[in-house]
Length: 395
Length: 143
Image: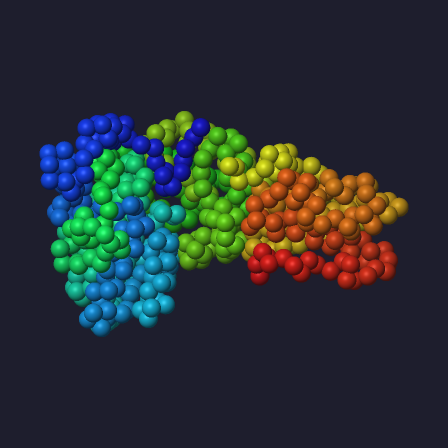
């Protein structure tokens, strides 16, 4: 099996797993208990907090453990909106290509009377600091822009956007779920006030994430019922998962320079190989791109059938087609960068991770063109394009 | 649980009757690229019987499997019987489809009706337009 869906989730790191195993066996107390068994758990939790903080340039007291990226995004946005509303500021700036954890939270706020402005990316998926600067108003209470896009891998100029936000004294939230462990993050120099993390995207366990909130950013609790996480997130802490998350992030950050080089080589090989398929196009930016991300559109075919046939060849990938999402609309990200519906249905995302090899990339480069050609042969849309009844959209 | 039944996967992996028929007696095409599925059915008709049928489909796994199954169900059948084919029959023959994929079986039914209508039109054969109307009960179709 060739697993190239690392943007969906990753396999557990052995180091993280070993630390969690020890934790499950030896550190089973409740961190809120006063006696030694409990305090041992409290110490383990604090240590995990310190390790995660160190990886992103934060202080440990600015790290709040949550159930994952979605919860962190929800809490960050709702908190900033609540703080803004108190000052009479109800304008929020975000982008059309955020994860639904951000977009759906914003949609809810819009129903509550907030004015949500979604910036449209350039055709390469980038949002510029100039766009943000032009959109900021007196009553803007939050800018929420992802660090890197989960579908097309575009890396946003977060430090530049952070500088703009700081100059206008507007808090910046960034969904860094796809970036953490894969790209360097320093919340202080990048002027990030709120940042969402999810452990299972960097070879940590599922069901745990963190929200970084700068000391200046008061948080609103989404879950009531206890004084855990500085009273901002009730519920007995998942100590072993927090330890696993810390171990995984630390490992990913330590290996980042070498792993980035390795992935960039595989990525280049994959992109150059797939670009040979006629009437296909790379989605996203060539340069400002997550090191493992490859996303293509193939004209005349539909993504779900492509995925099923690749699965038969042992390749696990994903697509932005409507059929794979269970909705009628194809990927909102591909539509926002200007791909027509018909083309967006034929998308393929391959996200490389630490276990992928050059041999696997070569196998993929053999399999994908075969499957695309097979599906095109039975596609009436493709036939119409071939015989000139319909025009080609991609070169 | 897998997304699709064994039957759907079998027809998807080994679709029957793929291709086109040159000088077909009836051709029907439904769906559009924007929605992500297009089905095209080619019929060869001799003495009011479907003597041959082929399809081309742009779409997801269930769209391809539904086309394949539908062509199998009408091959060798008299037109009167072909027009009785419902999307429910296609779905049942495939051992079911996920709820949000039922429109794929509707497309198969519609494509066949469109091909028969094309045959009648070409031959100048009178028919009841209501009997060949497109399915109106499909809420899953996008616009």
